[in-house]
Length: 65
Image (cartoon, rainbow, N blue to C red; front, side):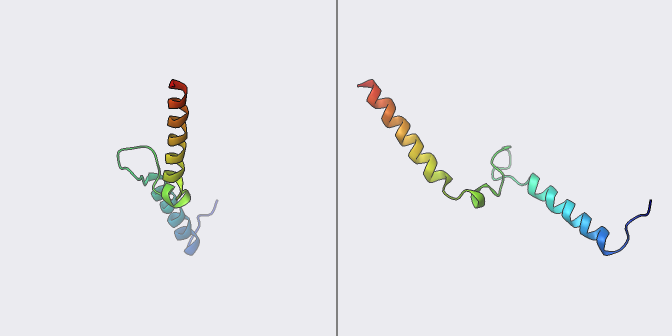
């Protein structure tokens, strides 16, 4: 087996470091969820979650009547 030499080796190391950084970053440092990229992937999540909660509460209170 031959060892990789030169630029190719540094490319692989850089890719591995980037992957490690992406997997280790967290939006809340002590929480396992959500990852730091969550806000970039789903920018409307807080709005949609709020709408869903309002609909569920509306449905719940309508059942109480």
